Every structure is written in structure tokens, then in C-alpha cells.
Image (cartoon, rainbow, N blue to C red; front, side):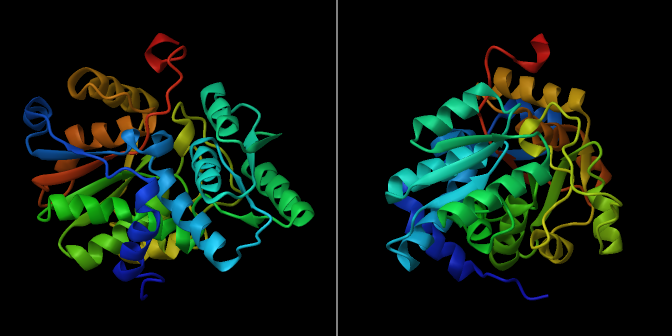
Length: 324
């Protein structure tokens, strides 16, 4: 399939939202290179505005909404926390009202940040269906535009600016490892990488229970029931199924090999990032770090220059996973 957005739209997203975002650094570590047996380049999205990569897609989508509808009554979204913070931040920058629906078990640090950006926080039952239905009801009642966490090409183009920056800085990467939830970041990065560096392979890194590799190999979602939250310590990547818009992009532009990482392995990667990179990162980032250190031997030929996306750093320091 042809990509539903191109590198041109990714560059436009970078120009549109750039003043509201950080160009995050690319970090290296000789110690981690030695442990991995290859060169690793860590894109530090934990240092992004709002503490995660989500600010990129949110700013692009919200500012497009502002451009297209100057009298917009605002935006609404549903989120496990990071996307909610990002949309709240983007709406504040754009001067738009904002509502954010979150599961009632969302970490307090994320809820406080959402409210801190001036958004109205609405709690729902902890299921993807409850989030979706509550968000739709608010959109219907308030007339606000839904900014979907991942199934939105404007959001994907914004997330793709990660690859734009990373490949401008390290143009000869062999691979990029991306923690995956709904697939917006992975889809965006895969589309941008295909145009910028066709030989760079984009691999998704998932929690146990997602089973994305079988879906990609079959070219269809294999799940029998509705979408659900996985039982994983990585709250930012606990959605089981990728989106209806992201899935075909992943089928065509991402590698069908998917790295499945256990909670214990994610925590190991997270802790190592704290210790060796001196970076506060979420458990989901630890999944990509663990895959970079231990799983790339499963790929033939093993990539030697690898980008690793540190997707976020919104951590509740009172509930670190190795202390619970």
C-alpha cells in the first residue's frame, strides 16, 4: 500500500509544531554498546515536552484543528496518561479548551500533569471500550474534536518527526526499536524511515499478550474479543490491539518480526537505563532497551547500528517497579 502520509507531511508537522517541542538528544553509552555487541543510539523522548513522545503527535493534530477551525469548541481525547498530558499541553499552547478521559487507575503523576495543563479530567472504568465511549459522549455533548491517541494520521505524522530527527543525526542506522501500544509511533517512524533510509528496519517491541507478530504474519487481527488492557507493569503500552488505521501501515512498513518482552525484562532494561544512561524512563522504554541488549541476535543479519526509542519518562517515583 502507499503510505497515507509522506515525508513531506512529516516535515510540515515538524515546522508546525516545532516551536512547542524539544528536539530531543540522541544519547550513546560505550558500556551499553559493549553489553549489546553493537552501537546503540538512544532517542531521549523522556526529555520531550510533557515527558513523552506523545507531545509530537498531539501538537501536530491540535494545531491542525486550530488552523482548520479557528472557532473550535476544543478537543477531547482518551488516554492512559501520556497522550492525555500531551493533548492537554497542545490545547493550552493553541488556546483551545480540552477534556481528557482516563481510566480511574491511571497513575496520579499523570493525572496531576493533565490538570496542571488546564484540561478537564474525566475518569472512566479501566477498559479501552469505556475510554472510547466516554470520549465519544463528551465529543457529542460539547462539540469537541476527538484527537485519537494513535488512529489519526495527523498524530502519526507528528510521531514520525522522531525518525526525521534521529535519521538526520545518524543517517546510516540499520534498525530502530520502538515500544508499541496502539501503533501510532511505530507507524509514523516506519513510514518516515522508509523514505529517508529504506535499508533501516523498524521493529516493534511489545509486552506479553499482544501477539502482534502473528497478526502481521497473517495480515489480520487474530483476536476473538474486544480490545483490552494487558496485565503488564508498563501502563503506557498495555493496549492489546493496535489501531485499525495503524495496522495496515505496520503490515507494509514495519518488520513482521516483533520482540515480546516480559515485565521482568522491561524492568531490567528500565533499571539499567537509570544506572548507565542516568535517564529517568518509563517501563515501556525499558522494553526497547532490553530488546537492544539481548534480542537482536534473533535477526539475520544482526543490525550493528541501532536506534532505541526511550518513549517516555513519566514515572511515579514512589512506586518504582523494583520496589513493589
